[in-house]
Length: 229
Ligand SMILES: [Zn+2]
Ligand SMILES: [Zn+2]
Figure 1 (tube, helix red, strand yellow):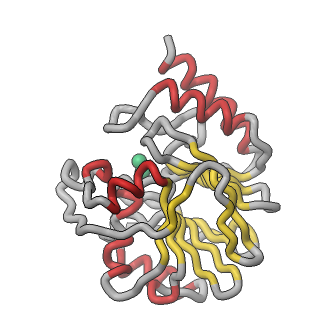
Figure 2 (tube, rainbow, N blue to C red):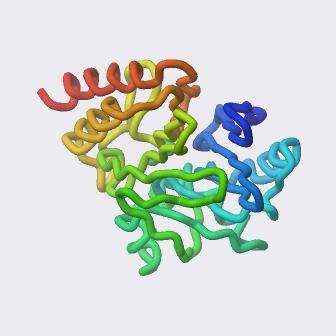
């Protein structure tokens, strides 16, 4: 079961998942209706209803940005692309294998999910600016949880979308899946702890609504201790 979208700022909504699904961010900017991460797809119907509550729906989505391609973030793309063609954006380190038909990094097999081939048109890299009119996002490549994990800074809002790299309460993403790397994760957390932002929207668990930078520093210190000893 997933909950209702929480309004974080003008036109920026955040859905905290209580299931296997990733959290989902929805942003409306002019004609752009953007989803950041999509959950597993198992709660497709509920998500569509929640989107309708905030003036959107699956068939209005123009862009899907993935923080990385694990099944709990990318799975929800499948029911959407069956009837509609939003542009999908993903870091090149994970987009290229998927565009070559290699879905292994999504862990779909590991979790017994059926993930058909996909085409990723939006190939992201460090520094890419996603321009959605009033809303612009900057891509930071933050590997460690996976090879192509990214964080997204929503420019001029103080909001950072942290994917499965940074979680609240001093926690952080696991590094034991294929493509994971402990030292990379520590470096990525260090980088995040040096950025300027107030609100953090993670891939799982609750949002970091105030002083998220402090939370990032706590996670960095914790990861350094636990992962690099
Ligand atoms: Zn996840
Ligand atoms: Zn993940």
